Amino acid sequence: MNTSVRKGLSFARRMHVPRSVGMGIGFFAVAAALYPSHPPIWVWVVMVLHGYGWPHLAYLLAKLSKQPYKAERRNLMYDSLAGGFWAGAMGLSPLASVTALSMMAMNNIAAGGPRLFLLGSVAQVVGGLVAYGIFVPELFPDISQIQIYACLPMLVIYPMAIGLVCYRVAVKLSKSKKALEKLSTTDSLTGLMNHGAWKDLLRVEFSNCQTIKRQNSVALIDIDHFKTINDTYGHIIGDNVLKQLSGALTASLRETDLAGRYGGDEFCVILPDTTLAQANDILERLRRTVHDHAHTALPDLRLSLSIGIAAYGPHLTDAGMWLHEADMALYAAKSTGRNRVNSAPPGMRACGSLAFE
Image 1 (cartoon, rainbow, N blue to C red):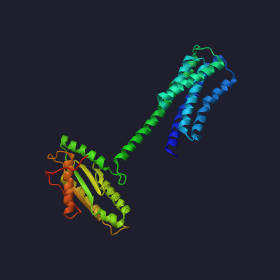
Image 2 (cartoon, rainbow, N blue to C red):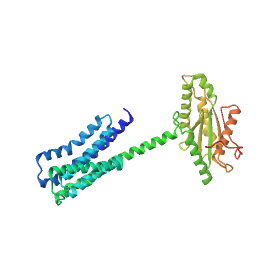
Image 3 (cartoon, rainbow, N blue to C red):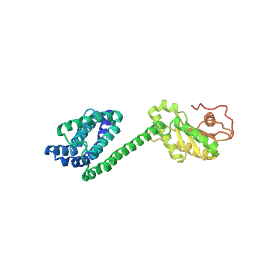
Image 4 (tube, helix red, strand yellow):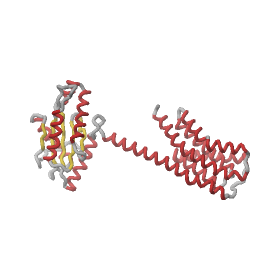
């Protein structure tokens, strides 16, 4: 089923409830206004069929259509035409007519905006003229007490039904928005934050460190000889290694730590409220866990990590400089044998900063 059909069916389902409620309780408003004129029996039959049969027929027509969205918009025009017809048959009884036509106008605006509202208004006028030509009723008859009571459910219950539909749509939109936001900030392979999202958080953490002087550390993690793993075992195994490391990161770090995939085989972590020594202990445990892990399917495959850590310090002028210190510490870990955690000396001066676009 393509997207347009799904959306059309969803639209038809949303309209089914308010149409059923509106037509069902609207029947009483129309009946109370027409009763004094003693209409023929066929009018009562049509009213009953329209009030309690049409909502379900309209949904069925949209459901069976190859273009359910267009079918449902046609149904709304039929609603407007019928609403105008009953208003004309009532002689434009002020309370019942205004109640019914305004509710249908609200439907049209909610479903299709000003254009559908204008089309619906034209349909209402046409329906009203046809009914007036058939019945020639007294125009603007007096409003009886029973008409007031008959219109109260329409004025109270129908807006509640529309409000419920709108609330459900708002909830779905909110969930969809959150899902899209998560997709835009999540690395599809590992489930961790992606490069851009993690850097955005690093800027926030750097600003917090400057403002409230909190301790904070940042780390870059590299899988040793990852290219060799890909070349030897294939990219599928390489992807599994990346997933395993992301799982190990999630299990080893605290809930407050912010892990992401920096790119390729490199990962990144922000460790809030953490000294350099504490960060070193946390990441050393991670390094040992990964190194000691044995793969049952591939006993020859052993992983090791090189990790560089840098603590926030007042000498840092921006988040890029802070990240550059961690990168230099990682470079030192890799150049001195790999499979180790290396910390940037406190207060070290980075000769540059990583591009932080």
